[in-house]
Image 1 (cartoon, helix red, strand yellow):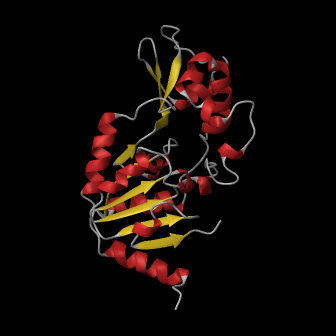
Image 2: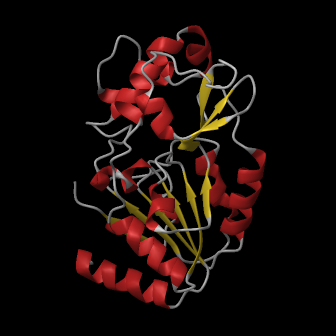
Length: 237
């Protein structure tokens, strides 16, 4: 007999109730309900039309060579500062307060997990809420980037170029964030993966460090790791 969605949700609740060290590994799909588009779905950013492909615009080389166009795209598509945490963010924050969730490993740069109240958040790709001067190192909030009248925001201290603290294509992930993410995943008694295609490496490879028997995939579509899951919950489009 086919397992119904409600039965799968009941199984998910039962698994979480039995767990005391849950780690959530999430991607862009977690924030779509907050109004932030994902990247790889049929209506995601990578399927929209621009003069340059988003993958090129969001690269280190493009940032340096065509900074004005980078910031035009970045302000238009990446700075969703009015977005609010949705039910998924709030549930994860509740689990952390209850002592069930040990940490979140996220590929998102929107900062919504922290806005919901989570403290142990490992942002693999950085955050739009952190920005710094490439010359003197001064830090700036995302609002400074959004509200700057200049096409290319510059440091109000030394005039240097400001760069968002997000990992662009061609840039490495932060080693400290990698180490902590892997350690938390390896020590988890339950790993929930949500809203990610698991096609972006090296991040997707981190789940190989999970050694438990409660691997849950919550996603809209099929992922390369479906055969490894102990439970799969499909989310309606």
